[in-house]
Amino acid sequence: MRSVDTGTGTGTGAGARPARAPVPAFRVGDWEAARTSAGVFRLVPVHVERDLSLVGRWMNDPAVAAFWELAGPERVTARHLRAQLADDGHSVPCLGVLEGRPMSYWEIYRADLDPLAGHYPARPYDTGIHLLIGGAADRGRGLGSLLLRAVADLVLAGSPACARVVAEPDLRNVPSVAAFLSAGFRFFTELDLPAKRAALMVRDRSLRDLL
Image (cartoon, rainbow, N blue to C red; front, side, top):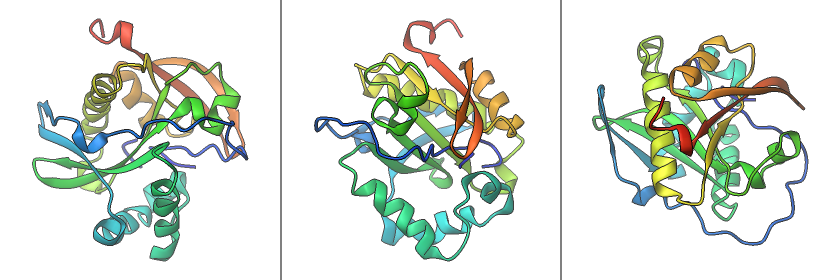
């Protein structure tokens, strides 16, 4: 499981992924920076050797570990990161860098090619977001919703075929669900996933300028 603000993400762990043809990798590193009220924000793809210590420390924060379940020695985090980096661009782990400071961890992934697609009426090119805010000082300030809105906009700008950005925070993680709602996502349905009961949140391209 994973978790927003106290830590947001959500692996579904539903077994084998749907069969798929090779797809172009997300080129997250080429996406422009977002200018937000909190400063300039950029997604930077993770390099394990450079970023493992930082991401591993965040994963061991009890508030994060309660939802991501990746606490433990650095090899636990390394295994998680390397599995994504070896997976043909289906999921891209990133650092969220605000005004030059790494302060959050993100996963941008093809939800329609993920086990999650077996739990909701997925559409081609649906793109999912997992997020954790790294430091306690950055939580509870509204940064989660601010950055979720910015990243959803980056996804829609960088992936023209994507009509929807989705997320599946744990229903128990009330701050996470609230952050998605404040970021312009709408509640779609509840999902019974293998490791949790989740809220499926959706941000539609067609509505992004209205919310």
